[in-house]
Image (cartoon, rainbow, N blue to C red; front, side, top):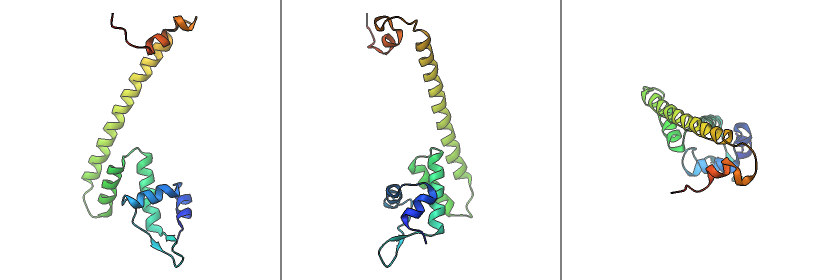
Length: 133
């Protein structure tokens, strides 16, 4: 059996995060020791590791919940899991495209700055209010 601190260290998860995952039902409520301490087993360690990896890959909590639910039924077809992963990949690709556009805009803004004083700074001008002449 593992204490909450040991579980946290093993998965690099804060104790408060573990308690939060219990409150929202991602982790089952653990059994308690005679001294009323939480007691976790290998299944809890595996489940929390799954949650942490899914979160590290950017899956939101609602999708993590769905993935956990689907993964609990080991004989089920994995098409739904595949669909969730594909949808998440599409979202990641949209974010990458947005970040690439942001990068281009920032680079152009920086390139337009020819030095000089703040009064002449093209970056400050670009960040300022939009003029409606």
